[in-house]
Image (cartoon, rainbow over the protein chains, first blue to last red):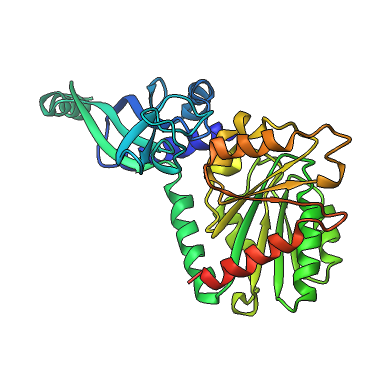
Amino acid sequence: MHELSIVSSVVETVQESLANYPGARVVEVRLKVGALASVVVDSLEFCWGIATEDTPLVGSRLVVVTVPVVMHCADCDADVEIESVQSFRCPLCDEPCGDLRQGRELDIESFEIEEADEAETAAKSEIGVKA
Amino acid sequence: MTTRIVELRRGILKKNDELAAGLRERYAAGGVLVLNLVSSPGTGKTAFLERTLRELRERGSKVAALVGDLETDNDARRLAASGAPVRQINTHGICHLDAEMISKHLDGWELANLDYLFIENVGNLVCPSSYDLGEKIRVALLSVTEGEDKPLKYPTLFNSADAAVITKMDIAEPCGFDRELALKNINEIRPGIRIFETSAKTGSGMQEWLGYLSEARVQKG
């Protein structure tokens, strides 16, 4: 159960990057998680609310895109998708394959922000001056 | 309002991976072979490591161990009886060791004076598989009392292992352990992996294991 620490490090990374976009609001954060990453997607989502509290990410959506395991089969000389992580055999020739090409990903893909337009920002700062 | 997508494309555990890469360089510079031992609680990692440390020392190898547990230094005291330098890492609730913990606990150890460094991870078959400790060899251990389908239940760990060790082979028969099935299941998850069938009590299988260690040390480049 290390999902909370994983999610906390996502929040930290996005916050660092957010420094380049002052005043922006985070709408969505997208993760890419491999089928062999040994994290539970439901737990990530459950922890998201807790981890984003009192941060600029509060209220944002967490979108987790899972990617399947892809192995390279030497016999077929092809990258093949493994349907079940219970058996690492090539679906084409049924031979065992150990050359993993995809499936351990635990990445932050992107995040979506809403930024106030320049005109709005200017208007707001003018109001601020008057007040 | 304008919406914008900010592409990051970076690993969530990048900080750990970078620290692990630094550790890997340190191990290589010191010429020490580092192994990360992972299993469920109760598999017998400590008993297996006790015997490994003792036998390697008898052969004149210089060995040390780091041992992770949530609490207590019981395992470190057991392992230290072998005469090898041992340090306990208490994670206080964290379910795995990470590269930063390893780095902190290596302080003051001269890696160049070691042949082998063993890291006994926290007993857990899930979380340790995500955390690179810079090790050369990740060892997944499984005891005859745990059921032959353990590799199928925890494929992420067994798939990321470089070697597998079956422990407590001395009680395989009374446990009704199906050896063929266990070997088949391990191979199904990690085709071609080296498998050692051992007993820390009787010493069976230890020769093959120690032979593998010395070969890996030579190859470590």
